[in-house]
Length: 256
Image (cartoon, rainbow, N blue to C red; front, side, top):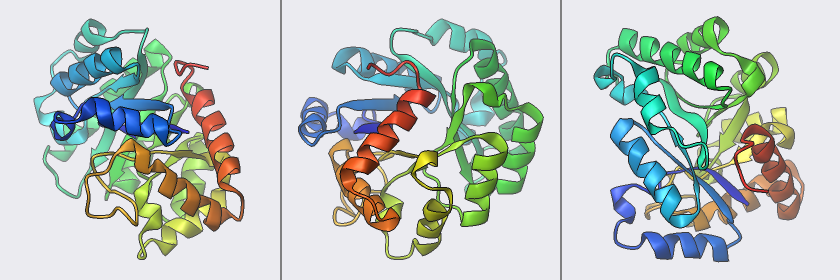
């Protein structure tokens, strides 16, 4: 399996990062993308990927938009490492916390979308409580020819269908799928089907049942895969094969 969205470079893994990655591989999670959320965090993600044989993405999370450099293009050009770098992200809009002004979030999103298009890279999106504005920005600025994923998708069936059908996006499915309260998300994945899904943990956040409340880690991806198989009425092996194929198609930089 491929964990398409992790943060194993996060400080919460400083005490046992190597062991965490080893546990993941022993559990069958052979590939991981560790995802940057600002310039310094992206640099840590790249260094972690170099050290442990992972892949990484670089991006400025909407929470950090207020501190984005004037020239995102120049900053990213100084960071980018084609040997391990597979995407721009995570980027997007977050109106739940509003840690950055909304106009700044939208401007930084547009700049990063332009960079992804210029570099012909897929995009890893974050969207929370900003769906209408997010869709508006996609319609204005997203080049779907290079693909993208809405990570940690928790929306409903109508939102899932719109993102998949209009923009060709994949949906990143993580531990929330296993939560008792997530029936609308389970309806959404049934609506779009396995062809539109990839697996992720978003570790160290959002551990799946039965690990909920613990620090999440890539090895726990197996619990989400099993639950997704139950929801779709297919086998866990089919989930792994289909979501892996989807991930490799989206992120050509993954090893084969």
